[in-house]
Image (cartoon, rainbow, N blue to C red; front, side, top):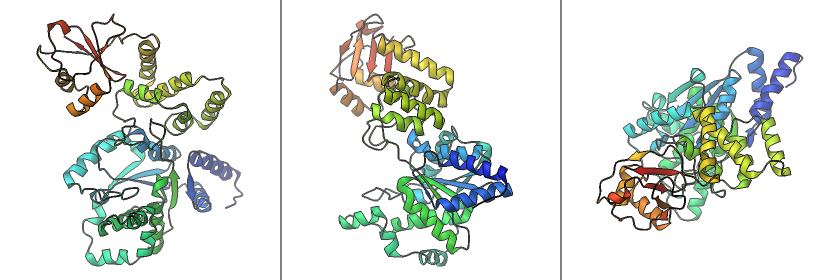
Length: 415
């Protein structure tokens, strides 16, 4: 849409540049431009929707990508609306799944949602964020209403959902309640009067359902703004807790730093674009220097890791984690700030690691021993250490003062 007001045109171009950067798709783009222009001309904030299904309490950096885009909208004066899917969580998003998820109890969903939002607010502006629960509008829905909503779409359209179609082709179970997931997500957009819905590129079908239901309700259809699915630290598959290739929001600063350092070189452009605080110009300069050889990959990762740690823990902590990493790995020394733990002579080493919370379970501990990921050092001057392969090894008085290393970044000194 053209405008004769140079100030409006300039602000429109500015917002379009900021909001378009890093997206995989804006559908329909022309509608987004018109919507944004009207918002600027009328000084009316857009309602920016992003939904979450709190099926687990903890999230990783990949989950934050749409919320970082929401924060950009907020910084431009728009309103973020986070929809807590306390109803869709009981279904489980079928996208990309080859089987139905187990249904969650209401109390578990609420507890997960509380912890989830605490982590999301590491990037969102709380003053410009509204939290809405699906139960606000779905709790009293009648069967007549539900049938009416179902009549607004077709079985053929639902089965065009890639996941649904693939499961039927493979003769895998597809429960009737799973077909309601896109319908409920679409109705959310009607209830909150969403102007833009943010989601991963795998959410396109569900987000476009919102357009359908708003149109059927006589509303201006929302715009779908889709963002990339972040690759995990393995460099080959999407970031996922089940695959163990994730960087959690609740990870300790040093674990965050070390995990960024472990990514393949080719992942740095993706991470600095979507997970760092870098501006578009700085991303371009960073990638250009990396490709030309002006910036060494190892140094680039340290810059990136420092920035990501600083995002969640402050600049000083980011710098401190870099210094600690360099001390430990470049100079082949043990860190200075190793926590101590009181052990009991006769205690099995795997039990000690579990009690000290260095391993999440004894089963995982046994796997780490088998992989040679557990090392014991006689004291802080011992630079080589000895690999431990027996999780049932008994500790005795001679181990007082010894240092145990689990994986690359977890240390414990026995006392």
